[in-house]
Image (cartoon, rainbow, N blue to C red; front, side, top):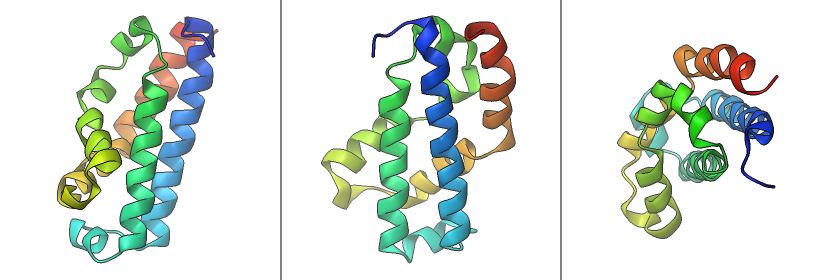
Length: 122
């Protein structure tokens, strides 16, 4: 799919779906603190893949639209994605936990749903 503002809504919807899956994974695996993530290899794999999916989808969103998402852009998704994809054994799941908590926070969800959709994707 071509990178343009018309497609941004599709990519944002995908990111929101991945964020919902992160929430679901945290609930399913009972992740309430970073140590909970450290105790489950299956949870680590699930969360790492979702971060990778979010980052890869984010790359398709136009710079103009990303400029609106200041909170979302502050997250260090690129570093986490690169380590998850290429150097999994050295992935620090305490940092991954923090990134996930920020992704599933109300602030990010509201930013994506309320600020972005009306401005870029009508």
